[in-house]
Amino acid sequence: MARIIGIISGKGGVGKTTLVANLGVALSSFEKKVTIVDCNITTSHLGFYFDFLYYPKTLNQVLREEITLEEATYYHNTGVKIIPAALSVEELMGVDINKIKNLDFGDTEIVLLDSAPGLGREAMGVLNACNELIFVATPFMNSISDVIKCNKIAKYFGVKPLGIVLNMYRKGLNEVDENDVEELTELKVLAKIPFDLNVQKSLIYRMPTIIYNPYSPASIEIERLAAYLIGKEYKPPKGRLFYRILNFFKK
Ligand SMILES: Nc1ncnc2c1ncn2[C@@H]1O[C@H](COP(=O)(O)OP(=O)(O)OP(=O)(O)O)[C@@H](O)[C@H]1O
Ligand SMILES: [Mg+2]
Image (tube, rainbow, N blue to C red; front, top):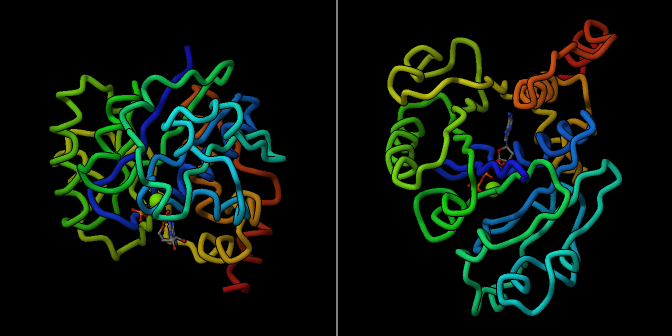
């Protein structure tokens, strides 16, 4: 049975989709069969990270039982399978997000579900469908307090929380540090992804940061997280020092 990992947050814009796109590619580079699903159907944007601007078959149609999951599956050259949600408002009609739990992902080993923020219908659909959970937050109290709330709700669903990813982490510029986050949320900090302009630049080129610059600080931390999730030892890419110096001058 596939591991189905929900990626959720209280606040919006904290980096869930960035994490799903990059973690998907990273896990795939470790030879895992990975499917990523845009469950943020009201404000979907996972496809943008893979330069998908036009795609005729979507998760919306699958959830309306008009097409099969296979028909809405797109194969990226990294090996990741992507199930995008529709961009148009009209496509929201008749979509029951709760049906995600009924989807059969075939031989996929790891499914990542990219949620909408908060505790609305889409997040509930993700909580219903997943068997493991990763919370994403920025290292600020407003973001962390929302995770505390979400974690309480997640407990009702009996989902196993793997921990929390702190994104856009900046040395000396975080309101709450790692230890406080663990104490407040009762969740293990799985990764501290640095604030990294490569993430934003890669979005301009519509590709995951790991492909745009595998040596960037954010890419390296996401690779490390991917290795941790599948119990593999992580070795940072060779030539890292050279690229760190290059990254410094690129800034
Ligand atoms: N580590 C990072 N460093 C710099 N910018 C980042 C980082 N992570 C994400 N961003 C930027 O933050 C913005 C929001 O990221 P993203 O879309 O992944 O958030 P989200 O949680 O999926 O948002 P939503 O809740 O709306 O779905 C994007 O412009 C992205 O490029
Ligand atoms: Mg998103």
